[in-house]
Length: 106
Image (cartoon, rainbow, N blue to C red; front, side, top):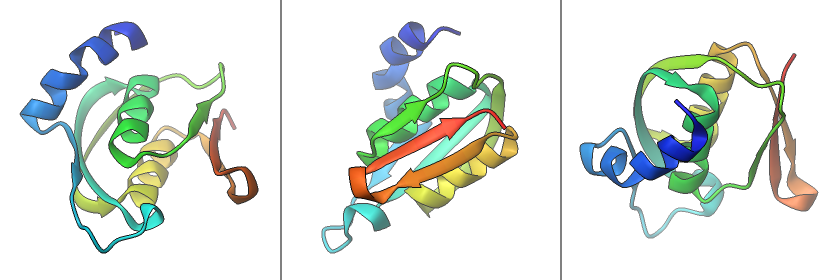
């Protein structure tokens, strides 16, 4: 599935509960909790949905490929991101100074 198609499907995925933000007015952006349910879903599309649900700035290297199957409920977005990326053998780099997260191939 292409990223463009996944983005077109975002409203449907959010409606079905495949990716959603769990509202909590007292949490900081770094603590924001989300729920995801991906089944053999393209990794780049999953990362885009996590970025949208969490509000995170995620940059994905062109070498990042694969699919992911994971179901996580009411989990801090950083933990969801780490689980998804780690499950696919990719690498996370947090750049706090610039408020960015980079996902790269190992």
